Length: 187
Image (cartoon, rainbow, N blue to C red; front, side, top):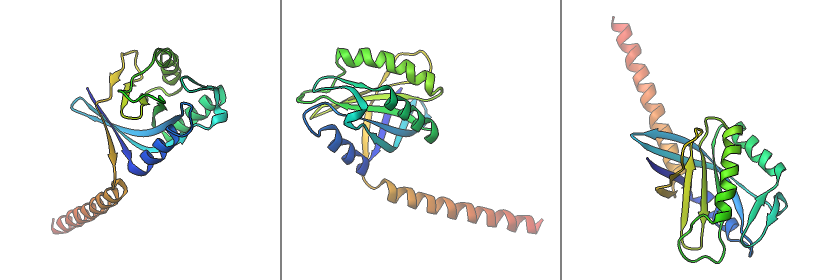
């Protein structure tokens, strides 16, 4: 399975500024719609939530632990938005390839189960960002192994193209509706 995550450029910029602010690791959550076809999974991010300093039980340059109130808040947001959830955090002072540390993996083992319980039917993703790269995995709601994210795309003119697509989709539907009523009148 190929997994692609698409992030609008304005959200990407906000995310990067947050993840690499200060000296400690930082975290955020992205909310995404999803579609799949021919073995591909496409996640389109449409919102982010930046985790504030007071939402961490542990917040250091090498380890993060979210407090329970923030976990509940994130789950509630994903459920109300009816979105898939993608966690992001930074690894500071890492200039090589991004990878999940052993403490990340232990934390993900627990958090994935929590997400599966709180957001049945939803996909959970986790991305770790270094100064030069990003690595990610996604889990579905079943007891399966994670799948590595294949691509992350930064969409520059997403809103423009969505408006254009919506316009032509509406135009097509109105033309089609006109033809249908015209042919019904001929019968």
